[in-house]
Image (cartoon, rainbow, N blue to C red):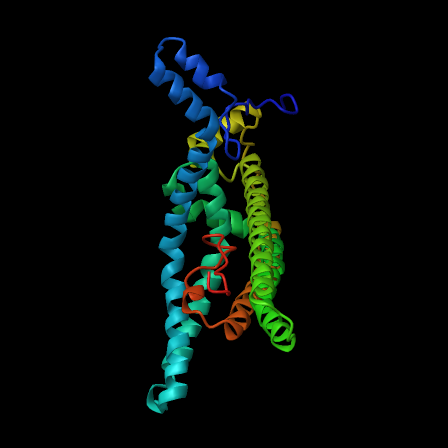
Length: 320
């Protein structure tokens, strides 16, 4: 193992500003003029913001590509349920529940991989790595309880989002019973809610991305060390990181006898089954939170975007 912090991260993106001008000024030594100076200033002021926006749009596209069909089924099931309730289409009563059930199954399969796929694309910088199901499956299979812990933090964060979506109803009741409530005061309450909700969604979104990245990184490291994943399976960025960290794939484990292999297979299968079952139960709780919140706020667009998974935006309930 090399030094504790051997990586040169000085050129990695910040939140908004560039790298302090070190790279830009180094490139500018061979060129001059006003245009070069203006470009350096823009890169210093907004270089990281542009890099982050570009990466964000890329991962949003790949995420939407796999989530919108599933969430579209939820939207159609919701529409089908209300259509049956209002128009009494009893012969078609099965359509809504069937679409919802299909959406549940597809979501529970998808969500086991999705946070890890987002982490993989973010690390590699290559959208195609998002769809590397073979490697992602090896990670999920190797660490089912880590995936269950990840599902738990998503469910906990989802409870906060559910509360934020239901809270405006309580505000409305309080405002309705307060005869002294002026329009200006109502606008102040709405603005305070928007600010609080935006801050909460931002913190939760970043926290969940960090949790997903931690599970992905530790799982990948363990599998490479165990020789179950080769360097060829890694992206160029990951290969570079492993080289700089002086980490190499370990030798394949020695061949065990048949009774030992049988016991390992049985014990591992039972352990993974329990882990998968726990993860699926927690992800189902996450789905339940979405449905509960939707019963209180019926805006259809909320079915297509969930701020902890896709675009971190909580649709404003105050007409804005």
